[in-house]
View (spheres, rainbow, N blue to C red):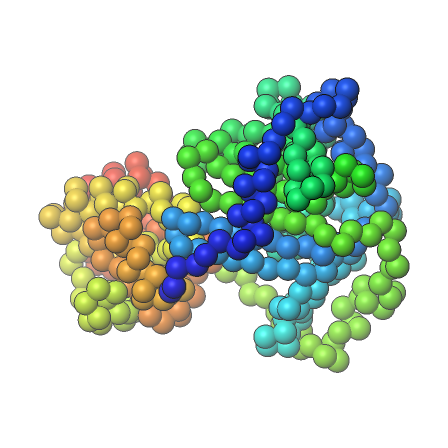
Length: 391
């Protein structure tokens, strides 16, 4: 994978935000600016905007950008989540109509429909990540939290003046809906920056940074229209799309249980190119880690897995890290950058299905007879005790 260059627009805007901040010259109290923005968003009935989401992680040589068209209706009768929406990008259409949530896929021309929607179903939907919905919901909590560091400054982008609202969170970040804060498993200081158009008093960008990191999560809202023309009535119903898209039933994925015999597999050693099977390690305990490179928790897992490998490898433990998502070159880069001391494997993604893996990292500990002792998140204290008893 070639090294990417930062988009000029992103670099320029961040430079302007950082280098042209000056003390706010208005008589308004800084907290009142937060209140005014919150009030503006609370007053919105319907809104349409062009949405751009951009992730830039230099240490991982990762950059991803997506964009599409968003329509949101905050009418009072949308009581399940407080809104309904339609979002379309090059991959397909996502619609929540206050009853059903459905998404189409242009890749395989399918439509997935969920009828019994709960708030947890919105977590992970691209159109909602750090969106106008997020900001509308999270700002009251930010304003009321007296312990949260908040600041307002003036900034110029080009020659146009904007407000720059900053709020800092410690070990927590807003969920997709902005209705609560999710806790991190490590100490992280998040810097949240909202750029607000002084004329419309609507946000144009939401930028998230982390102390000690060059990672940037950024969303932009452009071509905003308040009270736009509403989409056609039949566009809100999945039945409208069934002639174009085949309904796809989403199968639930459950991580393999303890006590089961671990499914065998044959994968490729990422360094040597040799074929490696689970069966060849019978008689030794085996720890499998399922991981992907674009995963902060997978990065944090490396030193802990290195420690287990060093502590128990000489006594027979085999640590195998399985990645069936990224390219061989990307895995090589990850191994070199983070000094991975254990073996990494790649190959057929069916191994993920056989073990019920849908999130990363996931750990499977297998005893000498091939029976699963542990399956779940990386829990060093639990694993350390189990490995010690089963060598």
